[in-house]
Length: 183
Image (cartoon, rainbow, N blue to C red; front, side):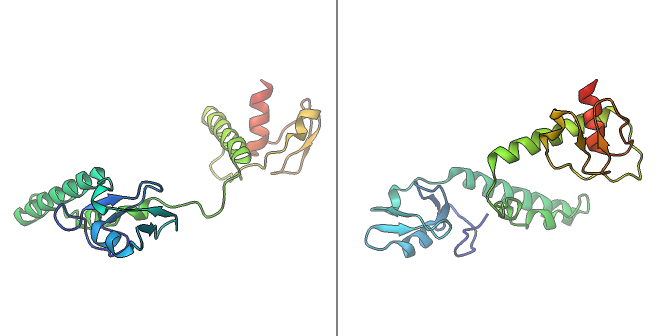
């Protein structure tokens, strides 16, 4: 685990990870000292300006301490096993930066729309687990359209105009969901 400013590993002696209280971002003590101006610090991640009278009073990120100790221990064990010929080489996993695993969304999330899509996707997944679909069929996630509640609706996948009494296409996941809701 490393400081995102200086890119040096955190250490419990000279590279202590400290948390900026208002935003929660973590940097090493040395980098925070370099950022302090007139008793204030601007976070390099989110640009939030906050008061910082004493760097020593900032909370230490003990979770990062624990992770760095675990990673160091795993690296030592991996090196020992690799040298003895009894283990696998895990260095490619242990050396990857963990921060690459967590990505920020590229665009703002519309919560209302996101919840509906998520529910529809989950419902479609549960229906598709119950029914067997041909392996060659590729089904796009349907756009949510509530017009079908009024009686007739057009399937976005197969463009067949449907009603609850009509025949429904065999491959379309949207029609499959509608069939499951009908039963």
